[in-house]
Length: 135
Length: 135
DNA sequence: ATAAACCCTGTAGCAACTACAGGGTCAAGT
DNA sequence: ACTTGACCCTGTAGTTGCTACAGGGTTTAT
Ligand SMILES: [Zn+2]
Ligand SMILES: [Zn+2]
Ligand SMILES: [Zn+2]
Ligand SMILES: [Zn+2]
Image (cartoon, rainbow over all chains, first blue to last red):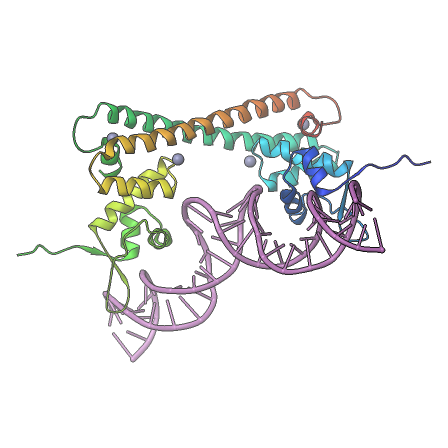
């Protein structure tokens, strides 16, 4: 005998996975989420499998992976053989891009902080921030 | 007697300011760049003033300011009175958002680096990165 | 005169959603 | 059985900051 399969409406899936209900539909349209079964009236019926994938996507997004990268991660995780090194490489590439972003932002941060400091010390009628941007 | 005014085509302005020619048109459409005079044939004729503004916009973008923020900076820089503190405040708000982005990225960086380390040390058939995202 | 190089407008594409409009469906309460 | 309200459906448009066309017109030089 089969055990009963727990199913979920879109709103329920959204609540459980902490992924916005509209976004769930969007992920399906991008091919990130398998299209679920439909009720007689045409409404989507999600099962645990979908929730797991949604959580996978959400976690990956929280780590800054693009949807394209996540798609690749998903297919790697499905094809179990030798995927470990490929997952590692994908992640390493992504890590480098994060480091690059941090570098860029730190440069902005420093420049801005310096400018604001000059602005604080300013006694002339012209704002040194505007000056620096205009020069 | 007037000195001659040096004028520039879009491509020339792009070259001098290091702003893409299409982007220059885009900035005009957003109200960031004053619409320049036109030739008899309808082509835009830029002068130094436009170049300066384009450089201002580019520098601000390099500091991560949004176009909306840049618009505000421009109107502050035009209305010279008491603008210094307002420019400072706008910049300080922006600086905070940069700091927040850095914090987020650093968290991602750490998590990812840890995962990759675990992946390197992995001897099981399942990639621990996939595992961590799936769990 | 004719070609190359540029310009014009308007529109569509990118990423990753989010927010409708204008319907249809479902479950609970009466 | 019926109604209400909450949900769902599709398709489309908006967001940000560009970038890239298509299908023309203009300028400039030879
Ligand atoms: Zn691995
Ligand atoms: Zn990445
Ligand atoms: Zn100032
Ligand atoms: Zn900002």
